[in-house]
View: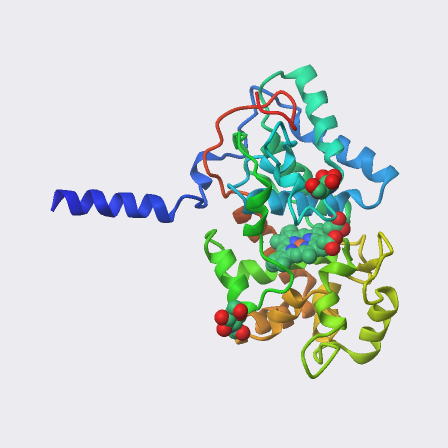
Length: 319
Ligand code: HEM
Ligand SMILES: *[C@@H]1O[C@H](CO)[C@@H](O)[C@H](O)[C@H]1NC(C)=O
Ligand SMILES: *[C@@H]1O[C@H](CO)[C@@H](O)[C@H](O)[C@H]1NC(C)=O
């Protein structure tokens, strides 16, 4: 009896190794220890965005990658060291950039409240600021994450791939405590940013043994994508914006998806399940519904914590 109860507890702990752990986070976590944290991070994001319009999309994606591997613990920020190849240098690192924005915010914070604010929290705040600066909603970010000490390139294989179908996407999200609704709302992050040819070549060249182009793509849109990405493409930064208004945070992503103008197979997959398809339509028709759902799901995703251990002094190095 007692041993089966212990077994249950251990099982629950194993299932929840990366569960949403909102209880340890709080909105006013730095109220006394670093009251200016929010404005310092927002300032760093704003300043960098003035010089480089790709900063907001980069920060949003960086936070997603951080939270999906070992929870939101800043593991994506660590650099490779000695024999250890970090996530940053993993196979899916394509398009990850703007790490300097987090380092700059950290430097400014170390000057006023040394050793207090975690890099994982800085990234969570920066992702929110990125959305707001791009014309999207704002929200209060729960804080109190700790930074992890482990980052392994091979673990980036745990990220969902752009070729995933709906069941694979659902599984990837549910393993992290995220629902189909979270999947649809968070995929709306693709209202910002850019994809390289390699991320969608499966749809425009050799799609199947019978068709070279994914038939779910709008034909003229497929032609446009093909003209940007030749087979065996060698042009270094060739690709396509994920949305026709890729520096503006809005619900255009869902509207285009309904027109067969999505970029990734994983975007298109949202139309292949009745639940997710209905949500795509809902968000395509209402910017407000999208924003509400996005904020709710962002808070959920950014509360995935796996018990980091420390507050780094520099975001790319463990203490
Ligand atoms: C549902 C599973 C997801 C898959 C399979 C996926 C996959 C991808 C891929 C392949 C790219 C293009 C990378 C490149 O070619 O450069 C991309 C870009 C991006 N993703 Fe996702 N993603 C997913 C979910 C998310 C989520 C949850 C967010 C954030 C809420 C997000 C935010 C972004 C952003 C902002 C970009 C543009 C990055 C840039 O322009 O620098 N993605 N994603
Ligand atoms: C991605 O990984 C490659 C190979 O390890 C590395 O050369 C490159 O610098 C990495 N890119 C980023 C943005 O860290
Ligand atoms: C998705 O892909 C997996 C792996 O290839 C496959 O087993 C599964 O049947 C597919 N599901 C759907 C809905 O196509």
